[in-house]
Length: 109
Image (cartoon, rainbow, N blue to C red; front, top):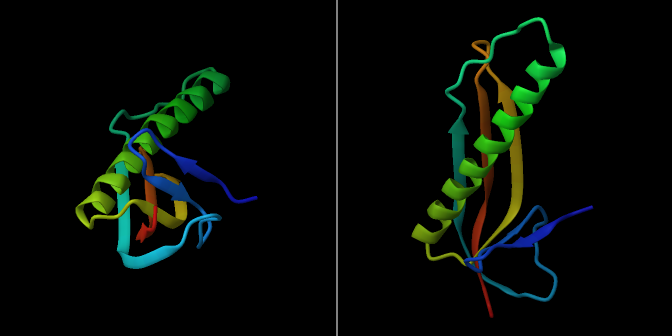
């Protein structure tokens, strides 16, 4: 199921290639937001604590990546981003990295 989210600054974000109820009037370019958690995760005796730290790290880094995605779309004068893809990776050094990519568009309002 696709998700459409409208944030507080009126930027429409969606995983779909169109936005129901809106007409895309211009495709402005591909935008990306990337963020990496710089806190190294170390494995201790508690697997549940380790997994919780990974989840917290990914959640925080994902928010930063989405902010950067939107900042890059605003530079193109977009008011929406369609076709959003999220990639989450845990590097070999145990850093959580999130990359968010989509197409910046202008929709008629």
